[in-house]
Structure formats: C-alpha cells, structure tokens
Length: 388
Image 1 (tube, rainbow, N blue to C red):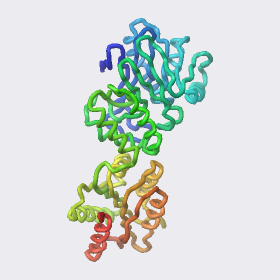
Image 2: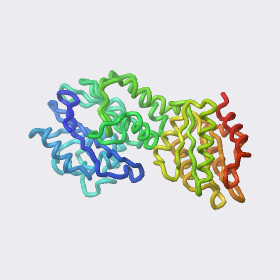
Image 3: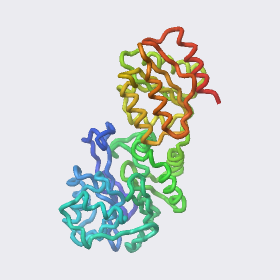
Image 4: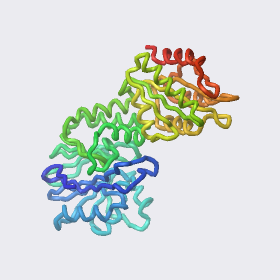
C-alpha cells in the first residue's frame, strides 16, 4: 500500500493478514498493520521497525523508499516486538546507524537481541530533546506506561506530524477499510485501558503542539477531524461514559442464566434504557465484552454458580475488567444456583476490588430456571440500576 504522509515522510509499514491472535489473545479477523515511517531529509530517519514475522516485506519497502540513500537514525518509540522486532536486521545492514530512544528502551535492547552489540549505536533522549534532520526537527516526549515504561512519542515541527507510538492505534490491516472507532476502542481498552492516568498526561503534552497529522504504530494515519479522535481518547482515558446504556454480560452453563439475562435486557429496554447490549461470555469475543463494559454507563452481570464459586467465563471477564482498571460504573448482579447459589458472592467480591463501582441492590437469585415469580425482583433491580 503506497501512502505518503507528506512530501518527505513516507509510509513503509506492512499489513499482517495472516495473524490470528494479536499478542496471542486478541482476535483480529481483519489482521493488523505494523506501521513504520521514513523521513527523507539531509539526514534520513527510520521511525520504528516492524514485527519480525513481516521483516522481509518491510525491508523491501524500506529499500524502495530509500532509493540508495543510507539511513542515519532509527527512532525507536516502543520496544514491544511487534514494532521493534527488526532492529537487529537494521543494525546488521547499517552498522553506523544511530538508534534514538529513551534510556529505558536502550536498556531493553540486549534483552531482545542478545547477539547484537549496540555499543556506540545508541543515543538516549529525554523529555523535550530534539534531533535535527535538516528541514525537519524531531522533538521527543516521554510517554511512560502508555503502555510500557520506555515509550516516547515524536513530534515533527516541519510538517506538524505526531508519531504517537501505540496511541491512537487500532486493530485491522490498512488494506481493510472499516470504521475507526469500534476497533480503536477495542484496542485502547484492552491494550492501554489500565493506564488512563499516563494517557491523560500524554494528551496534555499533545495539547501544546500544533498537530496536523497523527501517525500511530497500528491502524490508519489520521489527518482529518483530529478533535474527534483526541476527544474520544480523552473520554476513554478519564474512564468517562461514552454511551449511556447497559451491558448485560452473562455466563450460562445450561441456558437458564442466558434466558434470565435476555429477559433482563427486555425489562431494561421497556423501562427506557437508552441502549442495551447483551454478550455471551462463553462465546463472544472477550475483548469486545471488555470494550463494551468501559463504553457503557451501566452493567448487569449474570452468572451460574460453579464449584462453590462463579462460572469461569464470568470470573475471567471480571478479572479482565479489574486488571484494566474498570471504574466509576453502576453494576447489578443476577446469580443462578440449583442448590447453593454462590456466584453473586464471588462477583460482588471481585467488583468490590474495583474503584468507585456501585453495586446496585438487591441482587437477584435464580434457582435453576427463571420463573414468573422472579420477574418482580428483576423489575426492581432494573429500577434500582437505572435510578438517577
């Protein structure tokens, strides 16, 4: 895919449409892009490399874009292997190249490339440091814990381009056209969601810059309506509500809890809930369930009891929310148990460990199958959940 960012900044990234799981856990039916860029000035700078699984294709694109020039710098904004996986190849090809990165990133280099000697090849940069390429001046801003500790972003003063590392990234190969928001949201909350504070700190730095274009390490280059994307990142990283509505997430063994969950969704819609989404935690994509939980203002969790605890798909879901810093939401609980209901206790305990999560009373207990006699309690729970 031929993409020119500006006259002197070239896109040299590659699509990976063969990958089934990103980071060995996130489904990517439309693949993923590994973005890399080349700045051609008096000095030549490569902006990040790509995953080693695609390094042959990337090197061909790099060679074509260089047109017999020799790169002077390799700017490494993030050491995760999907971006830094081909660093050793570049040093082998260009022994005099200088790797520009944070001190923490430079410390990590031998951890990933034991057989490469980086002595004399590194330049450590910190907050506000600059690199003069000629017409282009690159300025570096630290972005620790967005979402690794060594991360930095780079601003090009000449063309007003922000190279944003994993920020503003999304799942999906560039060859597949799709709406940005859904897959960017799923990417954000599952990759960076835990680190809202550091993302907020980075957004404050970005607000001081005149940005005409955002070049992330995954997903499309953003040139228009930047306020929309930055606004969403502001909402997400503050853990604010993006969509008024209710996520009904259920984990059902033999179908009884599923019936109760769907009936609860009907009750919520009848009572005026702006949007109700139902997700089957045993079958639906976990990353999408996490995304919807953060997106919505309210949630209902419904699960079967299992081995004196809660059915594992629900435990897994709540664990994901906990480690991603789920917070500031209202949650209602429905449990099911045939002889010793205990799912509600476990769900309540897990939710209690999350910041500012308001567990709505009264919890509803179903015995094996939802019955007509359970409906009033479910109605009361829906009223309590939706109460202002």
